Every structure is written in C-alpha cells, then in structure tokens.
Image (tube, rainbow, N blue to C red):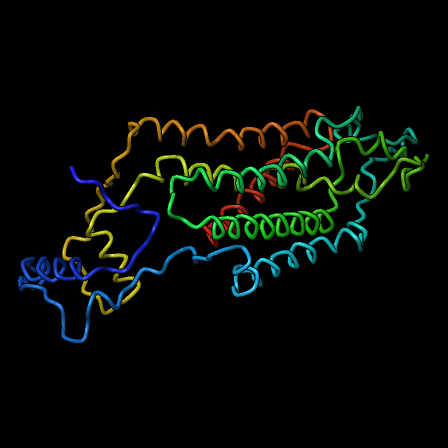
Length: 338
C-alpha cells in the first residue's frame, strides 16, 4: 500500500492528477442522464485550487514586516482590550429587591433560605483562573506547534492562529459574561450572609457588600474555564487525535473542489462517505485513545465550574449557563482559524 500525501498541507491539483481526473470522468456514467461525464473546454481542474490554510514566511521578521497576518493579530489584541473596558467602567447591575416576605399578622419578615448560604472562601481564585484556563493553555498550545502531526505546517502560521483564537475567544467570553451579569442581576447564594440587611430589608448594612453579590448568572469561572480549556481540547484532538490521520476519499476531494469552483463537474457518486486514513507507524486505536485523552482539559474546566457550587458562589443553573456560553464561543472562534 503506497503512502498517502500529508492531508494537512493542501495543494493545487498537479498535471498528473488533472489527466487522471479527466480519464476517470470520461469513463464514469452519469447517474441521471446515463451519459459519460467530461470536462468542458472552459473548465479545468487547475482552476479549482484549495487555498492553503497557512501562509509561508521565511522568518518572524518577514511575518512582522510584510504580512497582513501581523495586522490581524494586532486587531485581535485590540479587540481583547476593548472587551475589558466594561470592567473599568463597572456599571451597576440590575437592582433586584432583597427577597423577603412580610407577614402582617406577626410583623415578621420571612427569608428565602436559598440566599442564606455561608461563604468560606474560593477553591479557585480569580488570579489562578486566568492563569490556568487561558494563559497556560495558550502557551502550551504554542509549545506543541512543533510536535504537531502536520509537520509541514508552518510554525508561524500555527502560532498566529493560536494567539488570535485565544485573544478573540477570551474577549468575547469575558464581555458577554459581564453583560449578562449586569442585565440579569441575579443574587448569589451567599447574599444574606454578605449583605446583612437592615430591619426593613430594603438595604444592606455590611461593609463587605459589593455589587458582585448581584452577578450570579452566568458563572464567570464556568464560562472562562470552558472557554479557554475547550480551545486546548480542540487543538489536541485535531492535531494529535484521530482527525490528524484521517483523509477524505477521492470523490470527497472532488466534492470539495466543486464547492470552491462551481463550474467543476459534480462527481456521480459523491455520496460515498467512506473514511480513509494515511499510513502511520502507530495503530489507529492509539490515535483514538489520544482523542479521548484530549478531553482532559475540559475535565479540569468541569471541576473548576462545579467548585463554584461547592463554594456557594453560584447556583447550578449559573454554572450550566456559563459552561454553555464559554464552550459555544470557543467552538465558533476555533472554526475561524483552525
């Protein structure tokens, strides 16, 4: 069995492939018309070229001086900084009334005990959250570029994509999380403990009261941890797991070519969805195992998110909402560069 080309490096069709495709299409019968399918004089396979996902640079100096990619990474950085402005402005969240029920018969106030939990500290402080869910995954992914299965992929291109995807994903996650917190103004489970309401339960008297007690939904720890660590999981899965050795069939490649160039003739049997793999020294089971192990970062994110429930900082719905938000943003941003 001959070795297959590296699927990670997309190249235009060569002259030999062009001749082979012409011969194959001449011999194949059209399913609908029953006639041989051939190329027109104005349509050639060389016109349908798959664009390379990475741009080649001779050095980092060329990347900075001559490429539009460097300007793109600066825009990603500006986007992150602009997203953080909402924390500097620090607007007031929605002011919900203190949840109580007044009984006229006994002249007493009844508290909602779901907001009467005690606070004994955080399992994962904010500083550790940013370091271990965004900074460390980004640096680890940059370090793994040289070990990527796609050995012909330029390191500069991978580094550019990595930095951009983390900047944009982190900016979107932090911004949308804070906007939702301010709009909803949901009270934390420790609200009574940190607020210490007065006798009429219309204001807080504790010196430890802050507006963060009204920012329970969604969980910032959940959205940030799932946002950063999902990006690392996707990278490990795509570069070292089963997708790194999977290649499409020839008919699927022709189908992709037709998507790039609509004039390229449609293959008669493009519904063939068989999966092919390139030759590797290791069995495919090893790559499937690596794909499963790539979920470890998301397991860490799950632990960080659920620790907020143990710490009485969030309700379960807050954690679920933050996890869905962070994961969705990561999937979207990852599709922009990888």
